[in-house]
Image (cartoon, rainbow, N blue to C red):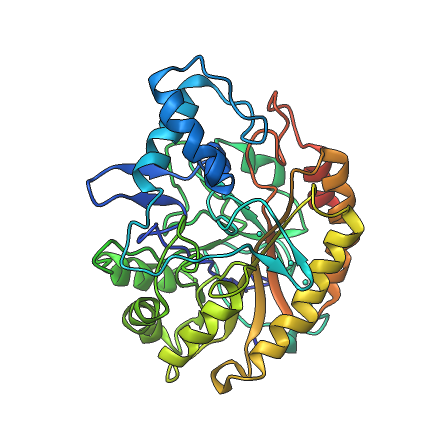
Amino acid sequence: MHSLPGPSILLTLSVALSVVSGAVLHHPRGLVCYEDNCLRSLERFSADAAAFCPAYLKDPSKPVPTNIGTWPASRLSSACNCFEKTAAPAGPATTPTGPRTTSSLTTKKSSVSSPTHPPTTPVKAPTSTSSRPTAGATGAPTSGSKRGLVYDYHSKDYVKFFTNDQKISFGSDWGDSRSPAPGVTLPPNLAFIPTLRVDSNLENNAWNDKINALIKSGTKTIFSSNEPDNAGQANLSPANAAKVYKKYIQPFKGQASLASPAITNGGGATGLGWLASFMAACADCSFDLINVHHYVDRRDVNVDQAVSAVQSYLSKDVPNFMAKYPQLKNAKICVGEFWLWDASDDEGAQYLTKLLPWLDQNPAIAGYQAFGGLWKGNFIKEDESGLTKSGQIYHDL
């Protein structure tokens, strides 16, 4: 029985850097790139960015493609530098190809699938406690909600807007610390979800000590690599992801609920296709949760179509996949990230209004995190005065 932080329930979302995690890309030459929304925008529109960034780095007066968005010059320059250095696969993984698909819907913009730290592109809980996994947390979660918050080093004190929200019970930051940066931390009343990250040698020497300490303080669930099927994220082959899982996640069987690597909703060799190869390489592994991401683009579908796409993916595609693998027999679904890209604030609010009740009432889903996120222009107003319409719906509904 598995679920997200309810009264003593915690789900740990895990992520890996690009050969580390979705939160931070470690390039072999030592460049460290933080996956903020600007870099993720470049990754999502990789074809445009590949043509734009080299010219922009030589001449910052070059016009920015409208689909990449409006960013401060310093931030765009930094993101372009990182994009240039990490555009090619940085790790020993296979590069995903083809567009991401959602059931019968296919986004057309890029082969780079859903993000994870302010990502590129990402769906809820039974009424009986018997269908929820038990998981402790550092601090007492405010409720049995399945709803979580994604935040990172940019989030400042934005978490304060959700501190007393009974709808939120946990948060994750694509790392293994509640405080990813000075002044940024998750309130003690919310469960924290630690994340696995490995380096280009598939190593994380500090992981075991950190997780043992977190388990002692209440952590009960651990997630593995973040979007290993995405060249812009963990970028791991199924075989390497299995090695990482067996070394760093499997040993905690019995001490915490264990989740499969978080996959995109891409098609072909990505998404569930990638996960099938991973399951074959990890046939003797244990899983309590299957972690999936789901994103579609508002320019490709309307709000109702986007909602239907998520529901179809989570009620048909994922369960049908799970039924093929004995190691997933008793697992629940965690939607680590989901969102409707390029939606207006009103459309984002409509999307959540239609989708959240369905997620909350679906007994197969243990927990979820909208990628609205604690960043200005997403769930936080640009002037930092409060929540956007989408953020308010996520807070209240």
